[in-house]
Image 1 (cartoon, rainbow, N blue to C red):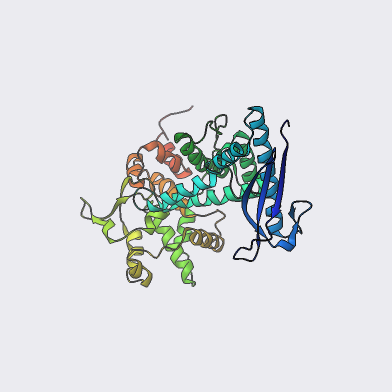
Image 2 (cartoon, rainbow, N blue to C red):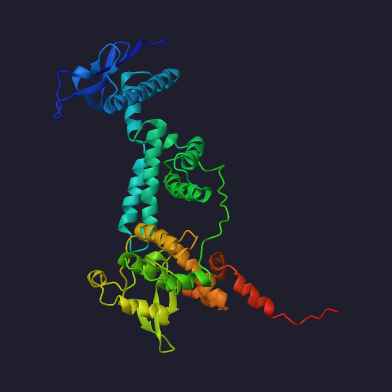
Length: 403
């Protein structure tokens, strides 16, 4: 470098913070001009190595401080080099560049603000489950940045194609996620980068050359035999009996977890046929759906009419958290000898495949009951089972003659 420069990290031992520690500074000297900048970090002065300009020891705080010192040293060296190339190197210009970088938008900062806004929209135009996915994705993003970069946040300039590739690798290896789960998290993350692009906080799209290709997965559902086995099983343990009833209710109404959890008396109306119906809007999409209530779901509603949990919450059924319900369903499946990975969502698939399509109900009626905008969406849930195929093939039995 043509100009005389030096970088010194030091703990200001003459100053004590409220925690009794000394603040850490960096002193940059350019041709005799001096610039002291606080790193917003501190350390017990006896744990500071003045010769090496870093913290002593292997404590977590010492390691984090030293990583940040190294990060700042690299950043300052780069800025000094860039300013010297532009022939604008001075303490004043360096300070302006550092302040500009400090004011840069960061990925975690934007993610947090996005989630805070989503929290306020729960029940308005966003479902709790959607917001929960963003919360989880934020946590994974923070964990990844800490593991990969040893930092708590990154400026948007660091979110590039390589970051996305490394993030995908993290989900597949560290988190042991499937292809579809990995892509779902990355799509959540893409919402944040798209927000940054729309506000012109980012120059290039880190997802520009990345394509998501979801794998087709056969969703679990119960066939007639398994459904009857579950309905006829009696549990002495109340929590299992409750979860069994909730699951069966969903199997015969097609309601998703968030919809059955929010179900209250206002959603039960009298239909044009004079019978009771469930009429509401999907929590997830706000699309209207309507399902006639016949004997089985009616009996389940009557069973829990005076349940104390229902009365306190002003709901029709005592629905626990999705995590608890899924955990208990695995226990129920084992006790019933059902070798399938049951979840709250598999009940919706059972309604579409076994209860309705398997009994020759019209696909348009099924679509309306499930709150789908078109039958193509319904076809993702309702698959042709053996019973349906058999019924259809029997229609041509005897039509043709051989010999």
